[in-house]
Image 1 (spheres, rainbow, N blue to C red):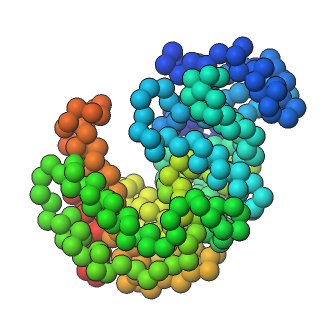
Image 2 (image 1 turned 60 degrees about the horizontal axis):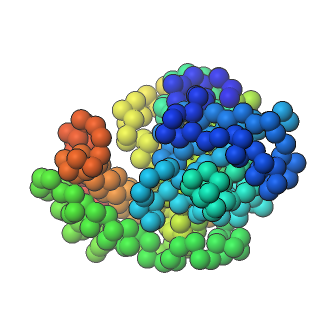
Length: 350
């Protein structure tokens, strides 16, 4: 892993006992099913916030990445490594940067849970969206490449690459509003007037229907690998939330990085760091993509994205309250719920 952008979340570590996999068991299976794979095999676990355990596989000639479901009882639709493999495979013949997909194994007798193997892409994963260890040129080039990359993704007709059944086409934002309203109500701990207002307002003020596209679901700086030689996106990571949906909703959720990082909320900071301000970034997307967005419609999309993330934060608050999630910071997530919903409600009224 190239160390140009230092981070405590980059690199690998010795496998934890919980996530240990035996190279002696895995090596003969991969030698049989992955072209040109040849042991011996060294396995390390990637450091970072993955919900699916992710491993670095190193042989004498080549490196790979293995991603698997975690052990234990799981929700049926959670940790969908099969969907990740399907979408990466479909994108292998496009100009969207993804690793080459090698193998999907559903036989749980091999490693205990379902897994897939893909190409290892060298580069940096940057966790702080203001890129504190980069230069002014680094920041501008990285943001430009992110914008180009999500635009490339949204330019693809998913039906043309075998993803017709990857999700339900049409009414994406309406279905998302309904889903996250239910999730919010199920985890509600205190009355938040701005959330109530958004829940009432959004269904009657949905943006116009956009062409169905493949959406990543959580496209962010921390979910891409940056080639540190040219500052371009070398690969998109973590496709577990991907589906068919509204590309502008996907892009607006990506733009929450401008609100979640206190450094980027101030346009003067962005200008000083040479990061495009949000308005410039949106204009860049419209230029790179086929889409045009009015100011009013953009505010609606951003209000929706803030509502969605507020509901997610409230869900974490509820799980901590119920004792089903670890941590003592439920109050901070609740504060984020309020801040996001307040800002979202303010935006949609402009």
